[in-house]
Image (tube, rainbow, N blue to C red; front, side, top):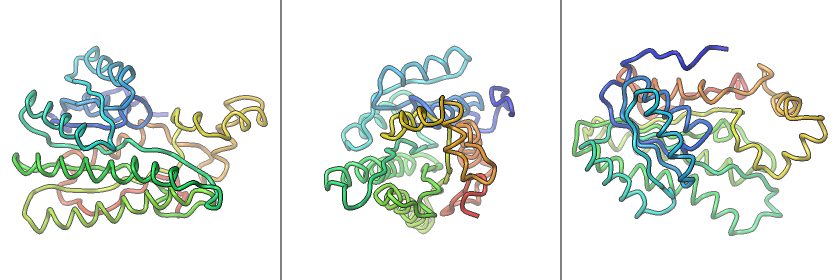
Length: 269
C-alpha cells in the first residue's frame, strides 16, 4: 500500500476547509491530508472528543486546525460553525460534506422514524451545509463543495433502500446546485464522490458485525468476507478516498463541477 502520510505539500495551500464527520474514517483521513497539503482545516463532528483528537493530530504535524461540535441536522450548528470559521480565518474555500449514517433494514421492517433519521443526516445535513457554505463562499472568491456520497447512490442494494435513496438524492442535489452556482457566476464547484466499501469504524456499529466476526473467526476474515463481492477483493482505505477529495478541493479540478467521481474498485462497472 502507498504511504499516504508522505506529504506533497501545496495542493491546497492557503485554502480554508471545513470537514464534517472528521472524527474518524474518511473524514479524519481527509482532514489530515488537506492539512498536510497546506489547508487550514475546521474539524467538525458530533463526537467532540474524537474531533478534538483529529485537530490535535493536525497541530502535532505542524498544520493549522480548529475543532467544533457539529450536528449536521441542526441549522443553528451549521450557522455557528461557519461563523466561527469566518471570524477565525475570514473565509471558507472548501466544504467536505462527509458526515453520514449507514443503515440497512428491509423496507417492510423499517419504521418511519428510522427512514427520517437516515434522510436527516445524509440529505438534510448536506442541504444545510451546502446552503451555508454557498452563502459564505459567495462573499469570498468562490470555492469547492465535495459531498461524500456512495456507490450505493449509483447501484441498488437489497435491504438498504433508505441509504441508497439518500445517497442517490445527494448526487442529483449536487448537480442541481452546481448548475445553479455556475449560472450565477459564483465560481463555486459542487461534486460528489462515490466510494464502495471502505475500511472504517462505521462497519463495526452495524447490527450484523458481531455475527460476521464470529462466523469468520476474527475481524481480519470478517473484512475479507465483506470485500468478497469487490472485483479487487478488498476494501478501500480511507486515505484512498481522501486523495480523490483532495483533487476536487484543489485548483487542479477547476473545470470539474456537477459530476461524480466513483472510487469503488470496479464495483459499479
